[in-house]
Image (cartoon, rainbow, N blue to C red):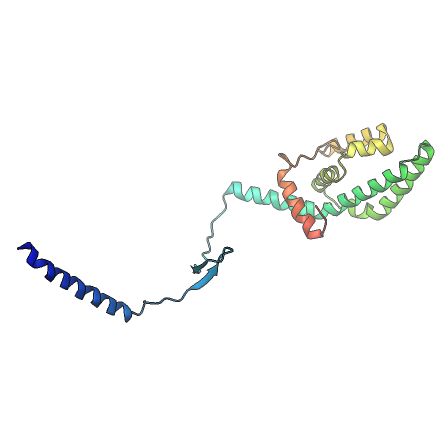
Length: 204
C-alpha cells in the first residue's frame, strides 16, 4: 500500500514547490539592493552600514586623575618642545664651531658669544615657564641632544657652574641629571612628543 502513496506525495511536493516559486517571483523582498564593495582581489561582496552609537560614561577618580596629568603633560610638551629643538640646533652649531679650536680662551669666547645670543632670544620666554614645564624641558633637551642638562653645562661652563645649578635644581625639586627613558618611565611623554612634533612639522 505504501507504494500507492508515492505518486501522490510527489505530486503534492511539486505543487507546493511551484507555489513557493510563484510566491517568491512576486515577493517584495525578492531583490534587496545593497551597497557593493570590491575587494583588492576583484571580488564583489554586499556591504551595509550600521548606524553609529554614542556611548557616554562617567570617569572615576582614577580616570579623572590620569587625564588631568596627561593634559598637563601634553600642554607642557606643547610649550617646551620648540625650545628643546632650538637648544639641540644651537648645541650642534657650537660643537661644529669648536671642532678645530683647541685654545681655551677662544673656546670660551665662542661659547660666551652664543650664550649671549641665547639669553637675548629665550630669556623672556623661559622665565615664564613653571617648575613642572622646566622639568619637562630638561627631559626634552636630553631627548634631542643625547646629553642631560648637567653634562651640557659641565661641558661648556665647567664643573663648578654645573654643580651650582644642580643644587638650585634640587631646591626646586628637580634634577639636571634626570634621564629621558622613552621605553618605560617616559613612554607616555614620547607618544605626546611624536604627536606634537607632527603638529609643529618636525620629523620627530
